[in-house]
Length: 385
Ligand code: ARG
Image (cartoon, rainbow, N blue to C red; front, side, top):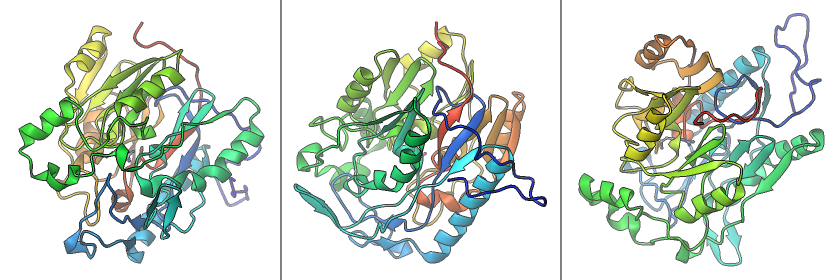
């Protein structure tokens, strides 16, 4: 738990005495408690039907796998630790997952996979809605067992908060029937128009054999949850979420992104009435219309600081720039090099907290990906009445 104790030379508030309370309905209410991921143990995954890593220039050509280079782990680990410390100094309680040996073969009775992945990014696996923490199905074999790294934190929440609802979506089978197993043979060579048509028609790597979703494809706006259909979330996963949250309006959205993977660098809640839209993506006409009809302002994000970013061994795009963490509805953590985006959002009245986080990109994401909110003040509200 919060290993930090207050000493006379240390300004970090001691949050350990505060009762545990799972409560978060949106991405902007004042943040009290959060999980921050870890870089330790992360593995460049062995190939599997859902995903192929192919980094011939960085020492991992297709078919090879193994631990991320030590210097990269150290640098990312330091940035994650510093970020966690900064949040603690602001009085926010911070939990961290417990890495296990991710560089091992894992099996179920139906398949085996040569490696796992890691415990970044936590946003992909855990979804907090009100007093519930939901473990997503995930859709990569290498991430099937990832929940194990979060069980100590979840058990502690369960023991400490008698109102917490701890849920796990049905563990998926992930047999070959769950995948278009030839998808990656051709997809990246298709013309962009064709890729976009496939995205629009939701004809991608996952079949509809069973419900599959990653938590990071869900954007929370109080009573409304927006679920992006993507490389890791299928229609059946959306259906499952819709039935699981009967008191919410759950919307399926597609994007104009050739590689849809997690909604949180694309359609980013900022505060009631304000959402950030990143790039040429999610111009889902219906979604835009829904927000406009309800008098929300859609900010088109400025271009990211660099198109070379993220660097080595990364599967994220430069639009990771918009992957920010709200401390409250006036305060935003933004990667320190994204100066133009910071200026753009300052002009809307946000106080910006710049956070060095570049080295974390290759471990799967930015400031939003790297976190899961456990407690924010505030209750369930309807922002689209
Ligand atoms: N796939 C997104 C991009 O490259 C990054 C989003 C990552 N989000 C996450 N929760 N892992 O733009």
